[in-house]
Length: 296
Image (cartoon, rainbow, N blue to C red; front, side, top):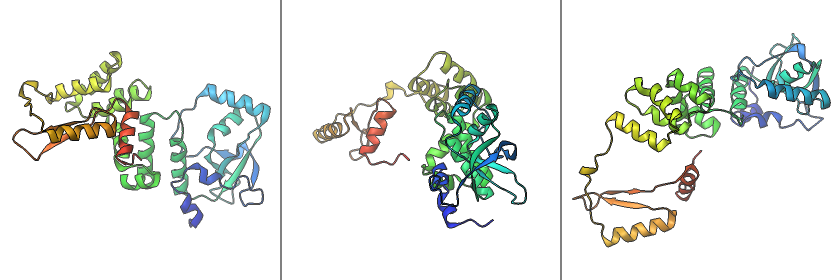
């Protein structure tokens, strides 16, 4: 099936592109009522578990008021009156629970590749997506569409390091991934654990982080100790700061609104480093915006 120009533009823009002309009654995307028995789930749907309580609540609403937003389907074989869901599987499942005979739908001419991508994009737009599910969605795009990290980054408008950091989660032990999936281990904690050299200590340390409610900073210190990277305070050399360095620090502190520190190396007049501490992820975002760093 040849891909149209409009379809190519829709790639990477998510579900909104598919709903573009729902409110235009004279468009070719007219809403039709399809029998639920003629519809099957999206074979590329990465989401396997659905909140049953939420489905029952939606089913109750559908019984009273019907389905407000039509689902999006495609017809893989024009000679067979069967359809595959592109978007709207929750509404489809809830309608079955509500014992409805039909459901409003829009039939789209969508290729196999586009269907795979839209299924993943719809999954990524969920508000309750866990870091692990997001990682699996990126991995699914790469495997099913044979894309590189750079290509996924471009399609989704995310930076390559952002995609790479999430994909690294898939290399964690099953026990650790389970803690992430349950929301007991944050993305920051998981990334810290990935830097642990002795991988046999990953699961025990992850459990300790949950049990002791360790912060990312505390976890970093433990990992550094395990890796033998802990800094030795006794070796620290204090260099007296020149008036120029002190004045520069004050200017930077005023600009960034935090305790910026300039450290000059001993016996190195023209070398050193600038440290900009931050208090939270929001504070980090604020600082990066001042630096004009694109977080996407």
